[in-house]
Length: 172
Image (cartoon, rainbow, N blue to C red; front, top):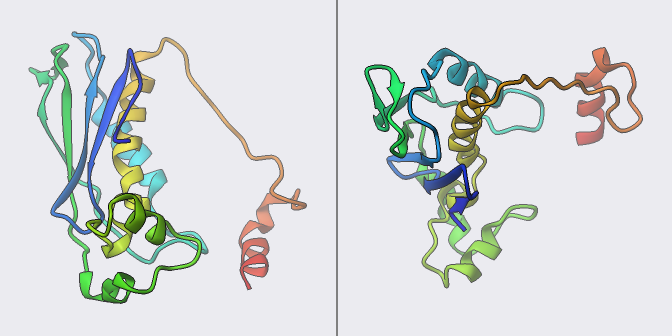
């Protein structure tokens, strides 16, 4: 499934090693001035870098091609495209015949009858969370209230200042 929602509907497109990924967002009311710095901030929070994440780093620069005029939403669908630049497809050639455990490689090959893009996980790459974050950052700006969250415990770890050490230990 590529589309989610009813009143606020997003359609995600692209694969990890294609030229671009993106999202079409339908259901944003006209007249909303989007804070693009907030969108960039949320994208920065999504970026890999912690223990156990991908070493792939992308700039996550995006282009808005529709749905915005004179800095305000028009009520038409908003299209946001994010360029993929850090792509080394040859590193994934072995996935044609050897799916990775704990990944969606095998399921993807079955679902798409062998026509899937296996490079970097294709449709099922963590990279595809980027357009979801963009949509979420825009959705937050539509709401008249703010959200906050706090992790108070991770597994049996209660002192979160030791999180890196804890994650290193459980990943060994």
